[in-house]
Length: 249
Ligand code: EPU
View 1 (tube, helix red, strand yellow):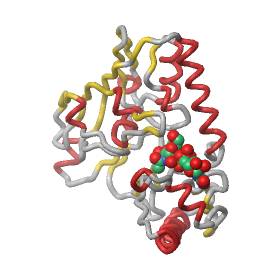
View 2 (cartoon, rainbow, N blue to C red; view 1 turned 90 degrees about the horizontal axis):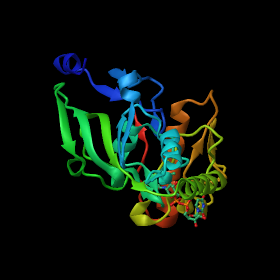
View 3 (tube, helix red, strand yellow; view 1 turned 135 degrees about the vertical axis):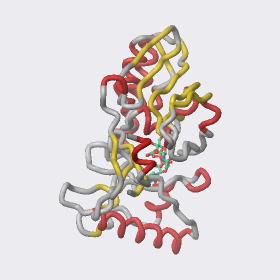
View 4 (cartoon, rainbow, N blue to C red; view 1 turned 90 degrees about the vertical axis):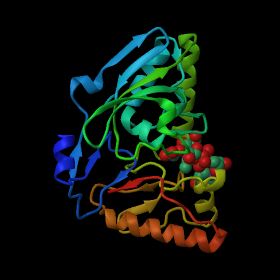
């Protein structure tokens, strides 16, 4: 399928669990793939090493690993992501990043060849990797042994912290902007007085200003216009240029 798309100059996008993605109202004209088959949902644990398919949901995986006495994924509590998406974005937060436990990757090159990579080749950075058109199909993780009760307590604590400070129950695409030079984008937007600012059905969350919440009827256009407005106001107020963290298709 990947080879066929390449031959026909058809762009491929992989939809993980739908987090961190905003699809324009006019849609996307290439192929959208979901890695949903059993092979992409496989989890194999050997000692502290775990091989996981790219379609595996990270939060349930993280909790299951804690219960087996394997630590390293607790920082993923409250972050909706598939393994493939978490690799591509180097998902994470204050407590850690996914890339730090990834040791190897199986990826499909744009020409359809399957390649095995050492994780260092993935170039993990702040919410970024250098996968450039390569599709993750499997990841090899190295976790650390830990008392299951301690690991799970940490997971629960991180999740509670996120639930308190982020609008996890509302519909959103996650944090909209990257933190510029380590400064909280949410705090900058908040200090510019933008919580509650609305365009159509899109609203800057009053719980955490780096989230834009929306209802089912909200068009992407409203969200994009609100993103531009927030960026403009933050530039005027703080002289800081915000860069989006979400993927806009
Ligand atoms: N703050 C405000 N107002 C707000 C939001 C935050 O004043 O509306 C203040 C908080 O009170 C706190 C500081 O800003 O003093 C930092 O806030 P927080 O702990 O929520 O962290 P953050 O820097 O805003 C980052 C990540 C989040 C991650 C949290 C916690 C980015 C862009 N954001 O947010 O990640 O969940 O730390 O680990 O890196 C994401 O990547 O999608 C994401 C949401």
